[in-house]
Every structure is written in structure tokens, then in C-alpha cells.
Length: 456
Ligand code: PMP
Image (cartoon, rainbow, N blue to C red):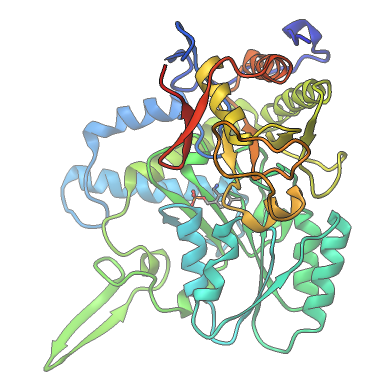
């Protein structure tokens, strides 16, 4: 089976956005080289050309932020603070909401976990990414309730409602992912937020996978906080965002102790008497990552100006093309928690009957120049549930590696976004169809825990 550009109907009205690395060529184990097929956006997306250009234009003016009287320090400070405003507008923040620049989604959620009032009960589905599943149990004086994997979106809301209604009085927080990094499925955010609020709880949205694919409006969704990472939003300069309600953040101990977080420090005898800042400075000790923040703001502007809704519509068209292609390949099982009709973003995981997923991903790379991801995707409980429990298959990717009819060890994930050309999806479907039909052309072995082509 071959998928071609002509197979698509209802052509989208927008083109892919220019990204770096679009014309990078990679060697094939079988000889020659091809243009790299970047289909691992969910791990880290390529930088938008626009982001790269904006950062390059600013770079000569780079200076310290919040700590310099010179012209470039003033300029850099203004740029950093303006970046907050751009992000606040991109996220539809409410008056009074704060935008904190962090290192990543993981950092943002750990920051919020450290800021929870004593006695907070946290409610989280076991299906979350580890970044939204794990920070809460490390927080002091916080209890975590893990809710089992729901069968569907409505059932998720009902389960949360019931768990919150049965909870004791006191501060409560719900943490939920916007779009799954495994299935791409979009969670019923507005409904979960309503359930949280009618039970006196707050809610934080892990938008690491949603924000790059779909407009996120904090006020409209009525979530209390949102977290995302620059490197998944085409801005790979080491910054992330936590945005939302100021009160818990202002009442908490600073996340990091150090310069910038303090209003005054007085040393008397054996003690230092510290008056901490409030507002964003309280949790942003140390020299801020102005390039990272500016890059995120640049990406927000680029997506907005390109027409985010149109980009999302184009992505849905590519997703339809991908799913149609996969449906025609024998033995492919697409992983899903909410069923085939659930709304989803351009992230999809699957297994192929009698194929080791690591070997499949290695062959897609080595023989076809296509970069996908294999594994459990930092969401072990979810992927194990979707795969049907503990694996039967041995971990080694080399021969003998497949147990006919056995339970797969892990899955393959393909993910794409605003920079993906149609032909990358077609190339992927055609490569997979050929591998499944003819088998791999090369032998693979496990080295340092990774499945790699065996030496010739
Ligand atoms: N949440 C989700 C849903 C994710 O997919 C990821 C990254 N895979 C994270 C959180 C963590 O993001 P980061 O690694 O940028 O901190």
C-alpha cells in the first residue's frame, strides 16, 4: 500500500511553518542518505525559524535581567517582562494571574507542588505523565489520591467528582494533562475544572502536549494554573511556564532561595533575617533565562499570527491521513484510552503484532531516516494499562526478540506538529507498511539499553 499526496481530500488552507532542520539529511544503514523525517515532536519539537531569527536578532543586545543599570540590562529586563505579557495573552490569563518562567513543565509542576498549603489533598489519575504524577507525593504535608485509569472522558469526570465529594475538608488540588503524550487524546478539561470547582478544589493543567497543538485559554477553560515547556512549543532554549493564580504562590516559601527572590537580607549574629519578595520574583531566584523566555514569547506570537486554529485544522488533516494509513497495515493496534472517536492532537502510539517496538523504531530510523520514539514514554502506568499488563516479550531487541502473540513490552510513538510536511506522514506510513510486509532489511541488537543496527 502506498499513500501519496493525492490521497488527501479537503486540503488545509495553511502550510507547515518553517522550522530548523527541515532539510537535514541523515545516513541510512543500508547505504545513502535521506532527508530526516522528524516525527518525534512530542519529545522535543524543532525550533521555529521565526524563533531562531528573533533570538539571533536579540543576541547582540543580551544583558543581565533585573540586575544592571546599563542600557542592555535595561533592554533585556524589559524584554523579559514583555515576554510574560505575551505569554499571558497567549494563554488567555485573567487579571491578577502570574506568569512564572521556569525550566520546563516538570519544573513548573514541582514548583507548584512545593507551594501547596499544608494539608492539601491532591487528586491525580494514574494515567498521568510522570511529571504530573510524581511531584505531589514529595511535597511536605500533602496527601495524594491516585485515581484509576478511566474508561472514557465522561467516566473520568464522574470519578473525579465522586472522589472530591468524599474528601475531607481542606485545600484540594486536581492535576490533569490536557493532551496525553501517549495517545494524543484530549482530556475533558473544562468538565474536570467544573468538577474541581464545584467541590471546592483547584486544578492545574499540564499543557506540555496540548499547548503546542491547540489554543489554551485559562479563563475559558477555568483552570487555576497551566504549565508547559518551551522545547515542545518550538522554542528550545531551556525555559518553561507556570501561569495562574497568585495567592498560593505568594503565600508559599520561595521555590529557590537566592538573589532576586529577596527584598532585604540582614545578617545578625548566627542568623540571616530574610524578607522575601512577592510576585513572580519570589519563585524566580537566580539570573533569569531571558533568551528562553523571549523564545517562548516569540513562538506564542508566531503561532498566533500564523493562525493557530488553521494550524490545528491542518494537523487534524494529517492525523486523519496517518490513522487511515495505519488502519490499512495488518497487525497495527493504535493505543487509546477514550476510544477511536475521542478528540486528539498529533500524537499517536501503536504496537504491531509480533513486532518488538524498539526494533521497529530502530529500523524506521536506520533504514528509512524517520525519527520516532519507542518505550513507555514516561507514563509507565498508562502504557502498561494500554498494553494489557506486564509484558511477555523479552527486553532485548535482537534476535530472538519477538514472541508471536505475546504481550508487547512497549510501544512506538509518532508525533508531529506545525512544521511537519505532508510527505513525512506519507513516508512514515509507507515505511511501516514495507517493514511489516517484508521485515527489516538489517539485524538489530541491544547496546547500552538501546536497540541499534548490528555491525555489518
Ligand atoms: N507532561 C507531559 C504530558 C509531557 O509529555 C511531558 C514531556 N514528555 C512533560 C509533562 C514533561 O515535560 P518536560 O520534560 O519538558 O519537563
